[in-house]
Length: 265
Image (cartoon, rainbow, N blue to C red):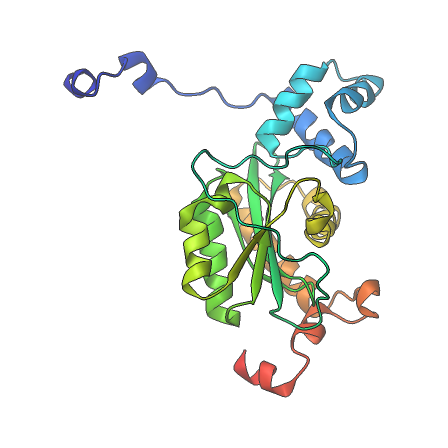
């Protein structure tokens, strides 16, 4: 009580515990995620109509609320993309008209929603754009900068620094905690600009693969189970899963294209 008085805080707000997401909303979020992967251009209005046709009693405003909670939005040309926190520096987009021709030339980072049997989590991945190799990932129950920085630091430690690292303008990536790690390594920071929804298309394809080939096939109960499963999946994704766009080679084969790089790794 004395601490609340000193800080001029209302005691009810200090002791308040937010209610957990209901089972109905968890089912809605799972289905919303599936629809968003298939039809990323649909907004809250059309998604609400599709859900109503499937028997869900939900309106446009509630769908929009859940989409914000999940960190997803319709892909279309618009005036603003992901909104950064006030005061965060926005860096220019650097990948325009650049051919990605070698490993570690350009990386990308992004966050996605991951459904579980009871609840949900967030997944961040660091991707090499040339080889499509997942360099590092982290899973968290909160969408903060900390777990993004952990994944980035692991990728830098294991694979060295890229020339450019591209992200969206989300607050997790515009935070100094994230950008300063890159700048300290001499990495040029790039951020998606207005209407540049296509910049992270390779990461979006990764999310679709992760969810349809692993997450949706299982009902993981805890964040620990998700981490363990994704460790195994990304090992398969990098070393054994061939990609048609890579001439049926694996990301590891593309990334470790030289004996020198293999020896360094």
